Image (cartoon, rainbow, N blue to C red; front, side, top):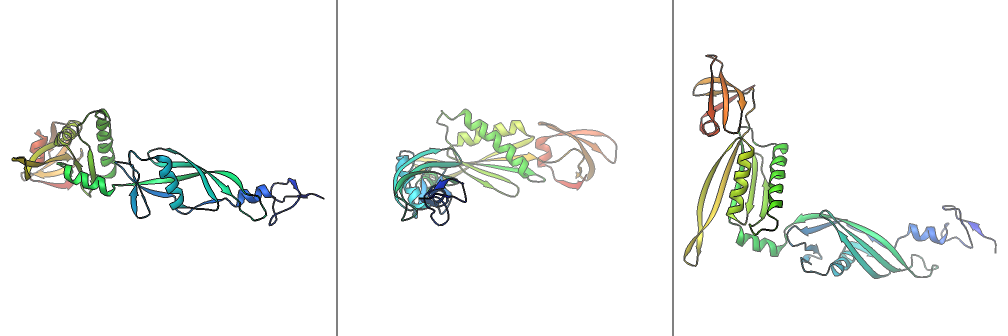
Length: 288
């Protein structure tokens, strides 16, 4: 029987299936088709949201979870024989073996595929409930007078991340939520000690002031339970800014972690204020 060339790969074969050889047909008609590449994952326990509910978690069988992901997020023509998992912080890669055939004239066989899914992070119901009971402190970070831009926020979060790495083996609590606001950040923690520590680490890094407040939120074992708030105000004035303070126009010459140096536009004299004095004074920002 005369052989015919495959128009795609050029190999000589006995027959063509819909205008291509058997191998090219198999390659162009995979047995696994991904319907959705994004996976909702709990950032605390690792559970994933499948079929309308959270499944898996820290102690789950990863291969079983992988099989459920393949069942939920893909369309399979054949029988799933194997699902092996590798994952990182941002994605999960599943090596799957499926036995089947893409065409009636092709004998069923086992075929391997690599399927990747991207993680989108949230908090599962179980962890959210646990965190709501354990959330005991808030670190409020605000910028004065300009608020905090994205670069400022990123720098703050990098510092916090480095601090958390230092405590990864210690039971000091953890961050339960971060809210990005127009003028700053709200960071919720499960430990007042952690919130206080982060506040003072940032205070040493930036010109700022700290205020601590406590609110009674309940009673446990006859003792009052407090919710602590640490308000960190960061100076976002810049050298060259002209401000009106105590009725006098002054230009900001230099800003350090403890003092700010000002030049009086009217008298030509220099003076300095502590960061606390600057933040607690009534100041009007005129411009640069």
